[in-house]
Length: 292
Image 1 (tube, rainbow, N blue to C red):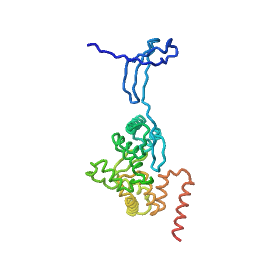
Image 2 (cartoon, one colour):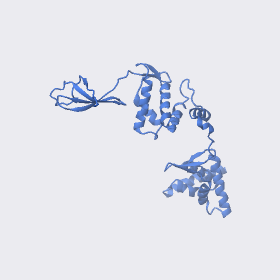
Image 3 (cartoon, one colour):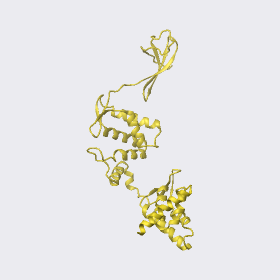
Image 4 (cartoon, rainbow, N blue to C red):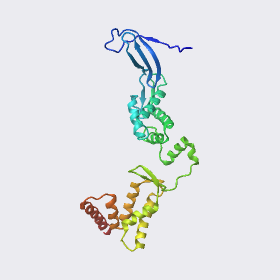
């Protein structure tokens, strides 16, 4: 059986400015659902133009009641900006738009001109993000559920509250063993994560300590600096290269001025003699103050 095409007739004007009779009824040849509404391909019998229209449903205004009692009209752009800020880097602009559209569809299922709380909108965002990506879902929760400055807020007070929420959302984490202390290092420049290597950290300290005594004394000095870094960061499973550098600077500064200046000149990228002088003057003043 030959396909039977349905043609719909709509009383609308042809958009072609040179159409001899724009009031001619426009024929609809194809109709497709679209995420923005209904997309229709139309044909004008008067001039032969073919064009596409998108029909959308206009929703009534939605009043949002904020945590402090203030009221405002629902603004999709504001919502998009807040989701983008909280989940930075984890979604493309198109994905963010889809998430906000899904939130709008959910909250507008109620009758038009209703009142909704900002908390309800936030919960809707969390539901959509959980389907999209775990990391962005958790990031938004830290920004949204993690607030305690709202009136009547029962947000996360500390890491224990966060873990209760996290395990409730992701029950499989109950069976996950905690990561080993200081197991990974995030290289900030490349955004790559590598296993933590204590020997490599000690080697960098040893270079700064060369010549500051016998080989055994240099090895002991480097070990003391490395152990100080481990004491400061050892309970954190993931650290950045910046954290390691900052703690090594602290350790060497307290142990040996020359080793510190060598290390600092590299990681702080001294470029003039004034850089060395300023750092040395700071150390000299600190030693003088401690001696008094």
